Image 1: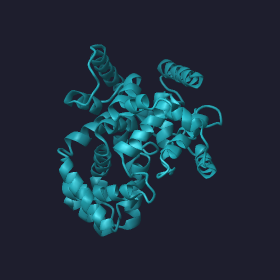
Image 2: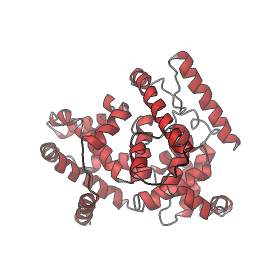
Image 3: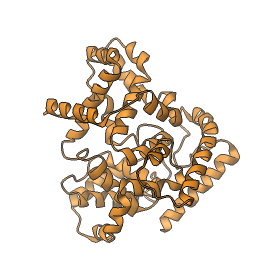
Length: 346
C-alpha cells in the first residue's frame, strides 16, 4: 500500500508540474520524454485531448454515480471505445475482464503464490527482464520503485500458470498494468484474465496463437485492401515480420502510452479482435507509403516506421478510424480466418 501511495503522489506532482510549466521532461505516467522526437507533437495533441478527457470523465462519473451496474452492454461498449478515464480504469478493467470476480472467489491465491516455493529458473529468467522493462520510466529505471512489484506479479503469474510459464512481452504488460492499477494483486488477476480468458494460447509454448493471429492480420488486409495485400506479397514480406512485437506485448512497448491505454480499454471488453483492428488500421493508414516501397529492405524499414507515424499519437482519431474506417468485423468471419490460418500453419 505504501508503494502505491508513493507512486500516486509522485505522479500527482509530475502532473501538476506539467500543468504549471506547460512542458515536462517526464509525463504523467513517469516516462522520460527528454529524448522523444515526438515530445512537441505530444504536447500539441494533449492540449486538445485534455478537453476530450474531461468530457469522458464527466460522462463516466455520471454513469457510475447513478448506480448503474458496470456489465457488458451496448452503452458500456460504446463508452469503452471512447476511452475510460484514468481514475476509473482499474475498477472498470477489473469488472469487465472478470478479474474482480476471480479475485473475490480466490482471495488467498496471490498471497499463497508469494509465500509458496518458487522455481529458481523462472525467477532467474524474470530477473533478467526487470531492468529491460521501461528503462525510460522513473518507476522502473532503478531497483527501487516498481521493479520489486513487477517481479512479484510475473513470478506469481508464471507459477499460477505452469503450463505457460514466463515469456518475454509479459514484462511490459505487467509493468504498464502496475503503472495504472498501482496494486500487485489487481495486476496479477488482470494478467491472469488476459492470458487465460481474453487471449488464450497467446503465451503458450511455441506461441502458435500469436503466429496465427499475424496470418489473420494478413487475411484482413487482403479483405479490406486487396491491392496493398498483393503488393506486400510481391515484395516478399511475411506477416510475422510486421506484428510479432505488437501482439506479444499488446502494443505496450510499441505505441504511445495514451494510445496503448485506449486500446486496452477495448481489449478488456472485446478481447483479441481489437488487436487485429488496431494492427490493420496501422497498416492501412500508411497505405501509400507502403505501396511506394519497391523492394524488401525498403518495406521492412517503412513497416518499422509505422508505429512512429504522427497519426498513431492521436489515440482518439486512431480509435475512431479503427471502428469507422474498418467497418464491420463479424466474429464468425474472423473465426473462420483464424481456423484457416491455423490449419495452414499446422
